[in-house]
Image (cartoon, rainbow, N blue to C red; front, side, top):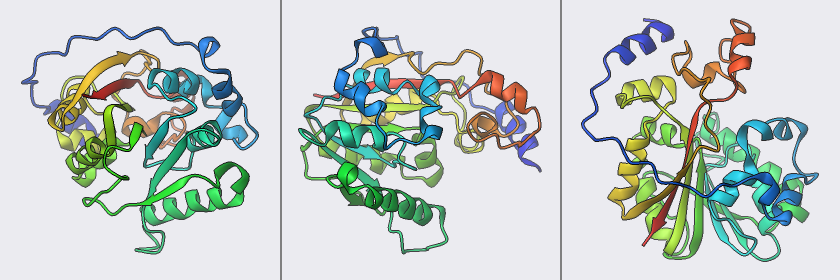
Amino acid sequence: MNRITLILCLAACEAPSSRPPVTPLAAPATTAATADPALLAAIAGAVRTEKERARDGARHPAETLTFFGVRPGSHVVELWPGGGWYTAILAPYLRDRGELAITHFDPERNPDSEDAKDARAILERLARTPEVFGRVVRVPIAPPDLVLGPDGSADVVVTFRNVHNWIEAGYETPVFQAVARVLKHGGVLGVEEHRASGEPTDQVINATGYVPEARIIKLAESVGLTLEARSEINANPRDTKDHPHGVWSLPPTFAGNDVDRDKFAAIGESDRMTLRFRKR
């Protein structure tokens, strides 16, 4: 069975939702114009690549980080930073008064694995520009055993488009448990993730990359975090979520290469939830 058939078949077999819809919580309006000037300066910083800057209109970094409550003096833990898209903003913003820690896998264990390649890439990027990244704390991880820092030490934990990977790997619960341990009382977990329609099965999540909001809310609640607010900063109503390669059909991946590329470019990046949880 090819990937297209698999996605369509799995989507047709989604289990009906057993949870009532979550009542939306109003979030304060946030705009780039009202963001901290120091944050805007970090977003405009020279350490960011042109390719990264080109995505600002889809990713809304000023609005998203403001919504998550990140401040210059915050102690922030960034989970699974990928190539460092947000790291390149957070590191200069927090360098003088706050602290940034990022997680990474062992770059030498299973060196041909995607996790090891990602670890080498982000660690090499940090090493190339010590004047910006020299104070970033590196947190080695080997799920499902996770320690993100001293218990009760972080003001904010952030994660961007990672929960679907944790579900596929089967360690989403240990990640949320580790988040709850590292957060201070009153601390925030900020989650941005591709948003599913309905409540798809794990097979559909793995095949498409889209996760239901209710699934993430349930995970957070199970470790003692409370949904405080949701924002539509990163919503995209053009995203129909029925693409042949799931979310990877859309930019920036374009998994179908030139097949319907113009159509997917016109849709833009995925429809994404932006959720703020609080540790009471």
